[in-house]
Image (cartoon, rainbow over all chains, first blue to last red; front, side, top):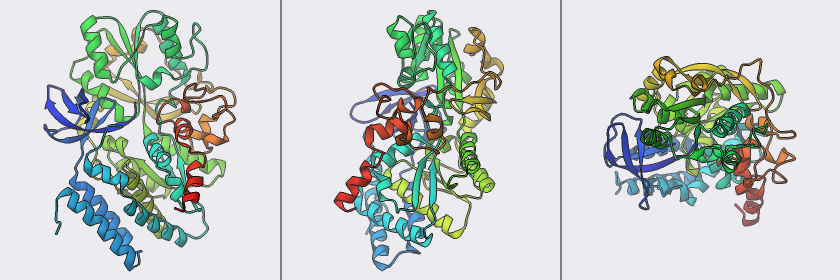
Length: 97
Length: 392
């Protein structure tokens, strides 16, 4: 039961929301976070939306790692880390060349 | 687990990135010399990721990943399971999550050692996906019902928001066995210090608990014990990056908190849930299975919400520190496994008589129980052997 699963919000109701877990699986869950809108990617835990997943913030986690790792890495590893970040940027559709 | 969006899938399957992060981890571990570094997680899903994806096989010899108290089903005292069995056998409908349904009690009650047994013997037990399902069923049929309310901070809003909003019918009662993670984490770190084993040098803080609490509680712990913490996500690359960040802080002698799981966790956490919880629940000393009482580590209904308190309605006494007695089966090592002081493979029952399909100890029940994860996915060194054979 203590398991988080990402889902898309399909419909907002009074204190609940309908979410889509993918593969046609939808469920009514408790709305336990402010500012959730239809279409948001959210984390559902034990039948409640506990927060909105910010896909953009994935990049800031990677940047945080890059900042830490590049100071330790040799030139080849720096290139690998940069490639890794670029792949995410392309996936997220931000800042790619 | 349901299919994740593409952006999260990459955090799971990018082998080149994993290899790059592994190099950083090894580089940092070399800088730390031969000193043994113990990093502890406090979430069953982190242990699941660690074992399922074979992350221990990627660690340098001096870095040990240890599972701490991270499974609410594992730590629910036997006494409360016994009381739930008794209520169900007396005809009160007991709603339960699927894993708690299989949780064995220490003592048999009317022939049953679990809610699953009770149902087979005619007890009134119903497995539901969530508290909301129980609210709907009880509203519709008006039957007296009890919900066995297991969980850590992450599960609290599924209960507190319907209660706070007045959506819970009068005939549905709540048996709170909710537990709080930071007090248990402190307890585990102190236990290692007291036993004189390798102390915990870094905390892999639970991402979803921290979605509710924020990163703040881990900051207090980092200061108190002088060790760093990283609030981590649950994909394998999240964990690898978090381990690298912890090793870097250990190397630099820093004891602060970093949020790796930025896509969900903030410093302050989910203030809406924190506010609702503070109105619905009070924080109390509470019993943990096999461990005993931990101060201020449980939640109970308070004020007008106590009208839904199953303990009061059905005259079920709460455990007191004086009355609590050791509640694990003979030879079961779940207590030490929960504290990160033993591995499942140290237990004489593990995969001999205690199996996921027939659990003896509570750590073998739920998918986030350390023994259940190791039994299913080979945490006893299988991944390391395979990694050695394929040369990673």
